[in-house]
Length: 505
Image: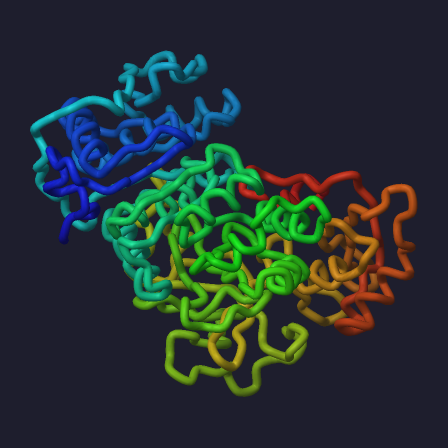
């Protein structure tokens, strides 16, 4: 395959090299990144795997790029991971060393590893490294571990290149784009899309370090063309736009961006609407996973549509499958439509069949590290990956994710109901600030719908009957919550996803 990061080839020694990455005042040009990563790559070339203490700093970028250039798999480590989980990841991935910034204080779980400090100012005349095969591992990224110890998804170079090139096609992503984000660099969204994406194109990335509304406005007004974020970030932007003390130029900054992209979780419809109303610019969504990288995405020339994540990306085969293995919909086929006779009991608000998303294509991982059993269970006999996500497909091919099979598909009174549409309906009520929906056992219905609500005014929460009637009026009577539980805050992870298992699911 061609180089994974072609913009770095030949960049060493140039004085006119454009900006590659910026973290606050710390800027690395392509020439500086090429030389620093080449120097480090030469030092780790014989390593089996390397762990990367993935702080939001230029050192992390240099470390990961060096590993890619040396053909050594990198294992990004979340600096906020607890000792027990970190010890599991280290034991499972068995890195030969850990790459970190000189000022980083590493936990005891990494004490047995050789430490190599990353020097972003290092210079090297060595700039040519043989390109590894397309199937060789690029990264080992660990899943969140919600159903057991985290599993290491082995991502080959082929998958990284395929996903980034598919997004280039869908988003008309070029070397002229300047990406702004504040995402963590230990995961697919922030690291692969948010750093390797611009570097593969020859563009640049400006990382805010920590998210702030003011930082987003500043960077977009000073040349940023794209913004990547998670729903929590866009919720804060929407709130700032609504406020009387909104940062100067925020609406102009968002309106002037070429693309506003949200991912890692569903962006609530009311936040879509608030941002569009204030800026005239719609937020587009995409859908991916650690194991699959990117599966779908709203195109740059497509219509942003709240609640959808766009059609399958080029090269990705996507289908919806019922519990008995029946293919309800093959979104990869031109003019595909739900299979004749699909059960209307398995329906969303528009009558489309709900099924598990299964995908196949060059974007997939090769398997879970040291877990052949889990790898085999994750794939169908014909090579499709079982995502565990439930979705419907609109007539024009736009996919709507309704939630996780394990926590967001509620079987109540003979219906299959997606939690996501009920959550959006609840969020449309002025008395609701945050909402999550789950199911719990019910002797009569099988499962009853439970709403977990953070009131807009904690001193005067909307009544349970009022919320139930609100949902029934927007959707259908069988989708109304039977129980409402009030919370001060919903439990979320660092990417803004609601941790429903913490709600007792």
